[in-house]
Length: 157
Image 1 (spheres, rainbow, N blue to C red):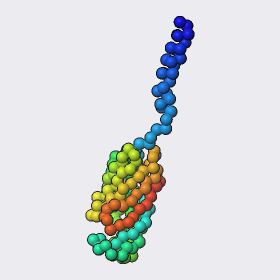
Image 2: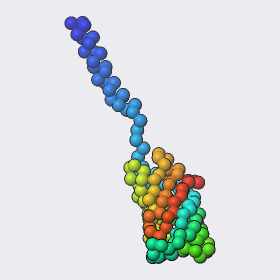
Image 3: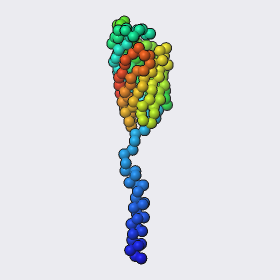
Image 4: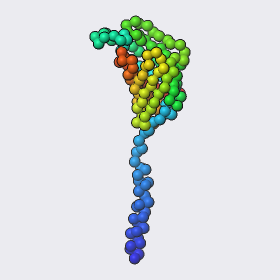
C-alpha cells in the first residue's frame, strides 16, 4: 500500500509539472498596430518610370528620405519627406509641404502588413516589422506599379 501511495504521489507531481514544461517553449512573436509607435527614418532606393508608360519604357533611379510618425493605432503622419527623381528622368528633388500625406497601416500577428498613404497616387507598401519591439521595418512599394522601390525604416525615438 505504501508503495502504491508513493507511485501515485510521483505521478501526481509529474502531472502538475506538465503545464510548466509547456511554458518553457519559445514564444512566437506577435505584432499589433501598437508595435509601431514612435518616429522612424525611412530611406529607400529603386527605380521609377513615367506613370502609365508602356512596357518598354526606360527605368530611372529614384530615392527617398522620409520621417514617419507611427501613432500606435493604425495611423501615421509624415512630417519630413524628400524624394529625388520621383517622376521619371526629371532630375527633380521634391520637398512636399510639412505634414505630407497622412496614412494608415495594418499589422498582422506574423508581423507582416501594409502602409497606405492618403495621397493622389495612393502610394502603398507591403511591410515586415522586426519583432518584438518593432525597431526596424522593411518596406517594398506595391502601388503605383511604375516603381521598383524598397527600403528600411529605423526607429529613432
